[in-house]
Length: 259
Image (cartoon, rainbow, N blue to C red; front, side, top):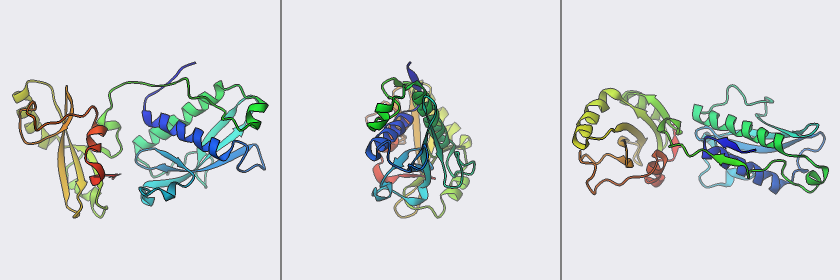
């Protein structure tokens, strides 16, 4: 039976879980009980799961990650997965993570257990180290990416509030926000000049020198772009990306840590 998921990040997590089980061996781990444990990290901003030597990754920044543990428990005719902290048998209610990251983590575990429930567990498969779920029936919904689903999204927020959130953060820290009192006048001017519906957002970030700056993001029918100060969005100074995350990636390492 096909299972549809709303975010590609969830599928990426499922792939990493499968790879981790294959790398470690389904029968490896703590063998004193039917429960198997796989040490993991979850990114507090993106919901990404990492296993194994995640701390060796050159982009691993400790303050962005929370230690968790993926567990699997043999039941009568299936395997049940859960994720927990060292202090709790479930996702801890005080997990320091953005709402978007929690949504991705909860959806990952929900889909994982749906897949496990569909898997016909056989003794020889478990003995041979097979993974007790299949990804072939997972389909990612092709809905447009929404900026309010991205890590770092803070909704309506003033510049002063944004500066307070970024204060004492390292260069590359950023957040995404709306500030209607600032953007409404600009949006009206640009909309009149182009005669198409437009949406405006702000990327606020710490630059290399520690200076906090804003970049205006524009959502158009052609895609996403940064404001260049020119009202005519058909001018060659504008380059368009297919999604807000793709636009953010054009900045490279200038931004890397959602605040």
